[in-house]
Image (tube, rainbow, N blue to C red; front, side):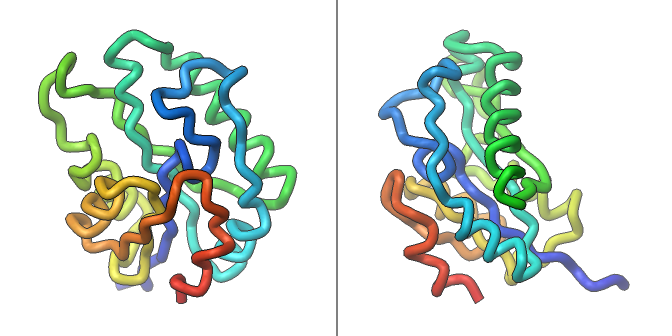
Length: 163
């Protein structure tokens, strides 16, 4: 049995980019927060960095998969310039009012469970940083340590909570 990996899961809106109050629908509204050093520190400690985000605006038709891919490409590019690599980006494209129930929309743990499975993660050594109670609930349901921050709060302020 090989040793398991550890990860820090990250919500997107309000954690990696500025919270807009509603869905970020266009590239022009996608303002990346400066968490470069904090995430580099976590990466250097051996954590995989994995994004887990609800993107119900897709189900509502407010933006396209193509627009979402552009935003995630820009996120990867800006962090890459600072030596930070995201291992993966999982998103839930569903919305209960439009697509019914799913197992991936937070607070359900589906996005995290996919990451745990795909990357052989030890949930007890992993964390989920989010700015909503549903992020912490999803983390708890997946056996991951949830850390609740305020929207747009610098990740550097909670690094001491991650071993």
